[in-house]
Amino acid sequence: MQRYDWLKEIRRLDPETDFLRIYRTTATYEFPWDIARALELALYRTYAVPSIGRLLAETAELTDRSQKRYDDTALLLDSVVEHGFDSDDGRTAIRRINQMHRAYDISNDDMRYVLCTFVVMPKRWIDSYGWRRLSEHETRATTAYYRTLGRHMGIREVPGTFADFERCLDDYEAARFGWDEDARRVSDATLDLMASWYPAPLAPLVRGASKALLDDSLLRAFRYERPKPATRAVVHGALRLRAKAVRLLTPRRTPHYARQNPEIKGYPTGFRISELGTFPQQGAQGCPVPRPVPGPGPAQP
Image 1: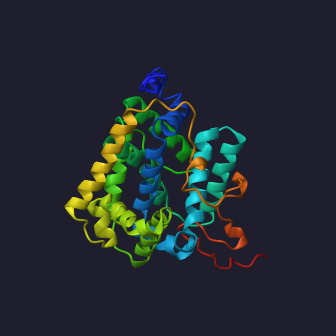
Image 2 (image 1 turned 90 degrees about the horizontal axis):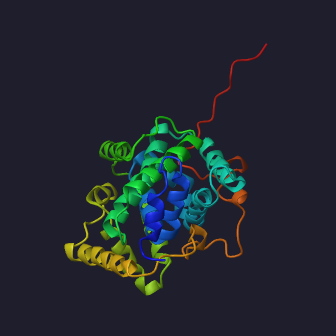
Image 3 (image 1 turned 30 degrees about the vertical axis):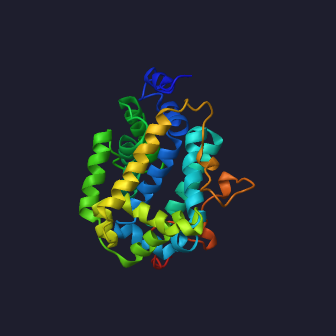
């Protein structure tokens, strides 16, 4: 195979009907490492919306059980990519996601915003740090894939095009990003989790490099000190140097899924999709907003 053979295959497909095949090829053959990093950043961004970050802190899933929450989120989302929307495993993953969300009063606006991050952030990351830019076919297929996921999750008024997703994300962040002390705790715990994946002496460097990738709106929302320009230059330069090196590699011949990532720590002997996540009905909390407890209804005759 030649370096651009997968892209040639993608361009022979229809992004509106073959979106799963295209997105799976992009995410597991062309950019598995980049997609993983971009989705981490996508979810991280959501903490800067106080209605999400503050109540994520209340569940303690991202502060007390960070690794499990990271693992379960990545594995559930990736199960749909690997097996498809109509497979037993894909339906099980979506059912688990929906069961967790239905246990809490999460606004449609917040759900739609999180979906927007899944569409927009990977393209922005890959266009900046990938070994090539994302093609128009891939962008359209990614948009169609997450429109479909949004429909399966019951999200209303899902944007139609990538430009619509991007506009929705930017407008929501401009209106909603803000300081919240509890959201800052979630952010700190996430940076600590990422640092824990490396040898302890490297932890400060990992935290510094992670903050160097945050834009000014995130830094302001979490009240982090702005990284020095030299630090940002080194981090961004290292990622672009990596991209040049990856461009010289032969194309991947086997897919790489999230379950194969070294950052997934909690299931060394395997997992069952039906057992991933949290089960609020059993007393565990795991999603952003606790559902209000209804008061007693009128007496029945």
